[in-house]
Amino acid sequence: MFNKVEICGVNTNKLPLLSNEEKKELLIKIKNGDKEARTKFIQGNLRLVLSVIQRFYGRGEKADDLFQVGCIGLIKAIDNFDINQDVQFSTYRSSYDNTVRLKDT
Image (cartoon, rainbow, N blue to C red; front, side, top):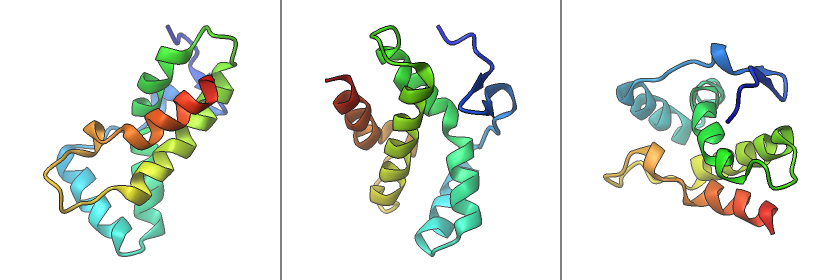
């Protein structure tokens, strides 16, 4: 659905891929206030944002707008994610799913 390589100035082909172990390590650093880890984690999860917003594409909203809303939701999800739960971050999507859903109304 998204053939666009650049969305909101982000070249989606150059987004980093993080292993599950890297994600765990970054989340621990984020919870300890590491801003560099936060940036790396956000960049490493932008593909997840793209997969979430695909459900809303074609309903009159611009892809860039949906992507921005999805990024806000991603940041909210990071802030609310509990690293002590036995859940991978990629399955913890309710925070930013709801953000995109609100934009759809």
